[in-house]
Image 1 (tube, rainbow, N blue to C red):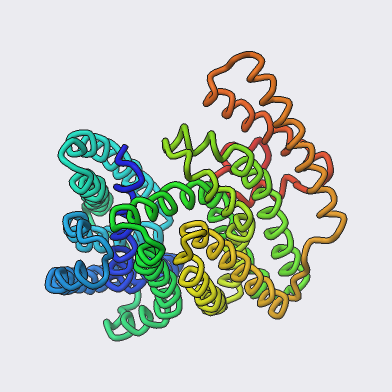
Image 2 (spheres, helix red, strand yellow):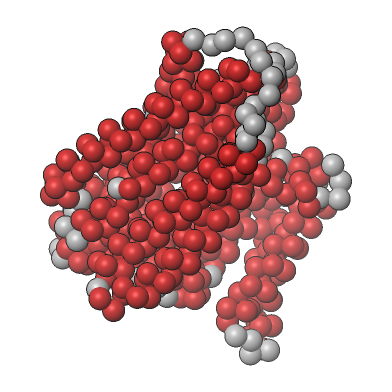
Length: 486
């Protein structure tokens, strides 16, 4: 609704906001989840209460401190960090979220540690419903008053959603613990809890901080290099919004699958390593890469073939189709990055993918600096730089896996079978598209029909050739409750 320019304004601010949240929470919610789960297994409810209270105390004062720091540094951030001064209102709208989201994350970590996922799921549903509803209303009301206010409304809607989600978590916490946690257990000293927090949080927080910092650097560099290519401030912001809010968003849709796979891989890989079962470790790693590769191919093909139609009907920005096609060249590697990162974390090597990401990001930034400023390439140069990043990071992760677990790339038989499946998908998609044109169907409907039928046939071919098994399907945790076999 707010268009590429409004998306660009929001995406200039969002990485910095996330960076502040990471610094504020310092990975404490993750530590809470792990420590609560450990002591729950021992029925040590006294320790659980102490862990939660210490974490809440730390994050409460940390969020107040960093909210204050952000307010003090606000004019300097707008002047020196953000390319477009119009983002000042948009950034200001996100500042209350530092306090709300930080405290909310502690409650989420607490419930996850208790293996009680209902409060988190309920809060997320409430948050998303409020976010979408308020976002649409604010955008509709504010858009006639200017794109700056409309982008500010979108930013504010996220904070409004987080506020109601946080309120839901508090209500469910009070309802569940009206009489307090029953049971007893060993007393934990605050010093010990703080020490455990640091040991658990430091590596993963460092990784999250660095990865988010690199995204913030992209938001800092890309508009400036577009300006060097001859773009005005408004044109640079709009083009940046098209790239991040349309092209990158579209190819990131399959990450819903790969993130679920990566999440389920961490304990599976850790279990195999704990048992010192190298065969099982290699098998699980090989299967994960294979499933990711096979799942990525149809999405990339669909995005490439129908880039014009997808950008037209989803984002009303058909001019971005060329960028989508460029990013499709590296998209399979993007999905493999997430899976290999999950495997490396399961191996207890969370800093290895961080190191690989830093190396790849240096290459990406060099590409952005050189190619984006070229008037003949401009934002297409940025897209090529991201492809370089995807390929480089995935390759480095795979090399690290080969060194740590003797991982092997898919064999020729697997590649030939997957190639056959993709050729069948191309043929089926072409036939279905022609039939839809013959039947004179509304184009968005025909796109959905081609996607659903094409993916079903592709999936059937994978099952028929043995490239995908029932065990592979179960790895996607969010699909388990829909499966007739367990």
